Image (cartoon, rainbow, N blue to C red; front, side, top):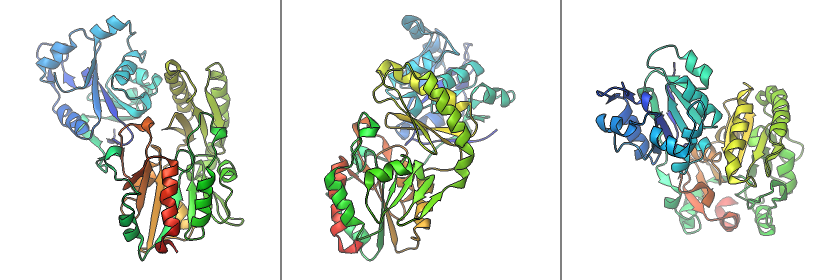
Length: 433
């Protein structure tokens, strides 16, 4: 068995099955396991909402008896399930209802469950992290049922340290330009930028996304002042065709492939082994989502993206669970979620933070005088924002789609064009010469 960690920047809700929290939940002497309250308290202190799930019609009384009546934000029990006509596990309906009441999509939610039927339900529902609790019995049965990880007790589940700042608390970068200029003085900045939602506004059709003329002009000036790189989830050739600026570096597919000025071209070898699985997953998803209006399957070289921005709200869960189900059939792939998109990527220890360091190394930029500046908007960009938190400058482009989530960014801007205005300051700063 193992330990695991819940990251509040990625997961905004945790759903607990009552049997994993309370000893002898069916008896009059029910009591909380000793490890339950500390975990829930840690989650709530970090702004992570919680729900409890139970098939029992006596859930309220059981929680009160155990001293846990006020411990959870949402309760979905047998009474509510009957009222709403929700089927029981292994159907995911009760979990999906709890996530809905917490106003959190399944992919941004964690399920903590000790029963095989509940784990199967969580897997079918497309939940982001599924934790099995094996207080007794072999962990293998829970892994086979769909758990991502199995722990012997809730003490083996920790809550990740975070920057402890909500998006609404992050100061505006334009208003704090003096601080940024001071940080850059006497150092060598290198600017690394996400594309969609950061340099270019999000569009309902990803093929129609274009970078504003003003942004292109600013980047052309900036690349004359300091090294500039684009770090995007798009295919390398796709993002290069949308940038079309000489002298900068481009990393596509979340850093799995890289192109520099001139003829420099590098692919991450570890991603190559996943290509056959990506091809088969593309075929299956195209077939299974063919009749879902608005769903778009977008094959990239090292990734497979399914966009659901144009999907009817009542069909979104179907799209996400389908991608999770197909992805789960291929051990070489993992699932990642973004702004109205879910992706299948090679299942290796790789994210935008690691890609950023790899990119800096390939650019020959390291040392105490280098200040990496990264700007992004998405959940996946948080890995890069965390990577530069101690030695660089992180900027987040806010979006109403992400609510008031936690972020590692030092500064924020309200929209891509606001970031353009901030980058214009970088381009004009003597410190970036």
